[in-house]
Length: 282
Ligand SMILES: [Zn+2]
Image (cartoon, rainbow, N blue to C red; front, side, top):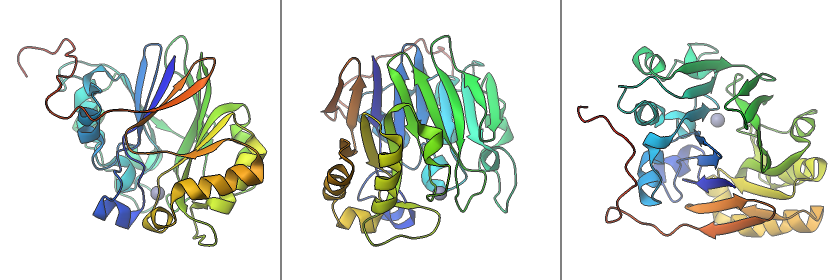
């Protein structure tokens, strides 16, 4: 079974500042892969709230150098490497996350970049085997950070596509053909398109081209939030005939033969998180 858990469904500057929705990105698990994606502000807190143990992670994907995607990366690396005491896990990140470029300053320290077993500075159209069952192929975007990347993640339960931040461009949809579940960052609602991002109409066009079994919108900005993302998804479903839902903070998608959607109860601080074999001295 593969599981996708949304640690935050907010995105964009003001949503990040006001936290009407959390901005923690999401986490995918399948077989022995446990990977956080775009751990923005609050990712580590939301892991705690839904009872996921970040020290079990063995992969981390950071699409680009905007704060709503990268701020909790260093603490996620510390979790994955068990306080920096063990060399383990794979970090895959867009180039601007790993080095200064395109006017962006690398947001992750060299200390933290030295901790994972592999730290991959990825460009579009590259393929990485994460384990014997799961492989990740990076995809191209058109975004204000030019080195932003998305992915197609092959798992035994089907392929999960993630657009990351991008605007619609010719060839975007082609990259996601074959995705069973397609996750789209849709910052803006109908009739409120802005450059570098998807709006509801763009998402509908992309979903109609890719034809996934399930399309999931996330990364909502304040304007999208105010227009009710679920209503925007109803519009897309009626236009495309494809089941399209708005992700919610704390929601999980379970992929087996069927696809099921459940909300995770917030376990908060009372519920112990399953301990992994942490070193005694930190
Ligand atoms: Zn961005």
